[in-house]
Length: 456
Image (cartoon, rainbow, N blue to C red; front, side, top):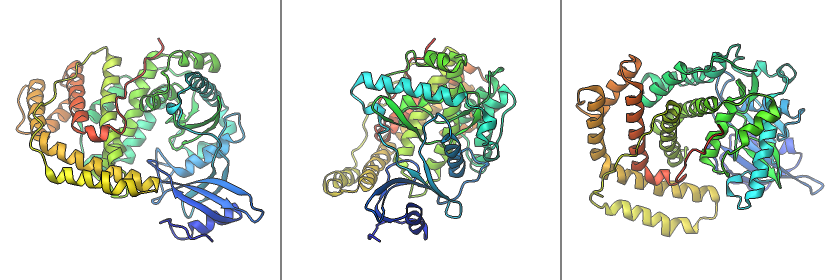
């Protein structure tokens, strides 16, 4: 077997080679949030089998919002339908890994410069999504692998939120954030009261979570969030993906969805499910930024957290009809830190240019981002904390002794429903703008992200 550089669990490489019926001749870590590897298997006849390996180093059960086993079962079920998905070459429960076909095409629709092609692909994906949402659930046979099957509109809207809260209850027992508390409360108070049908939804659907070739979708990928729900949830999910990966906007796409699926579109449902998707993702993202393992790409998670928190606030504000102006930021740059500057220069000029492995280059950039973030927190953290205390004092009626105390008091007031919605939304949004500004080096990984206009 070719000398391979990896840190995969014992026995996994041998299993991969056995499934592929040949020798592994390429094994590279894929640059992504979830661990994955690009694999080529060369067979005795000289043919090459291109594969994509996904694994869980700590197996996740079917009672979780995300599970590789669940994703594998969903993809196997969809293989027999008109929804294009990768072929599953093999699944190993003992090693908690799945070997998928590496599908033809590309996923970076946001990078297309041909706007005609970009629009054609987006419309084709909408048609694919409409087909998936109208599949017969009994024929799919996925109920044993999904955490729940909703029977009411409220369950369809909130089951995945409740599942996330349960999955992360140990973390949330010792961690509170006023935005998480308020957003969950807002979702409960504004949950839809009707639903046309229950569908299999991708749960994290939209740009970059499908492959395309030419003008057509070649495969739907990343189905670990898949579950049964209100099909309109995927419209909100689609908005979130397009927010992070701008792909020409949403104009007319949801009316096309209504035409193709026969399921009525609602603008408020799209707004509601934008928030729902963000909240489901917000909780584990906060957990990673608070208790990250060094293996995690913390710089990226900081970006997801602070851009995502701002996006959540903006979406709630839009749904509530509230306009919040961006606050002014501190103008004093603070004292320069020669150590931080030296660390960034060393990585940027002396290390990163000499790296050839894409994953290593990504990690080197992470180091620069983290050093820059630490420096900004040193320079601006105290000033911003004073601003938070001032604004919390206006909201709560009494200025808190410090920022942490103020956040705890705000969290308690939200739970007690003792504050005006507009005032809470305004404060949380202003705070989110300040946090996003403070973490600017991480935010620059996904710069200038804005919500695309929704169909009326």
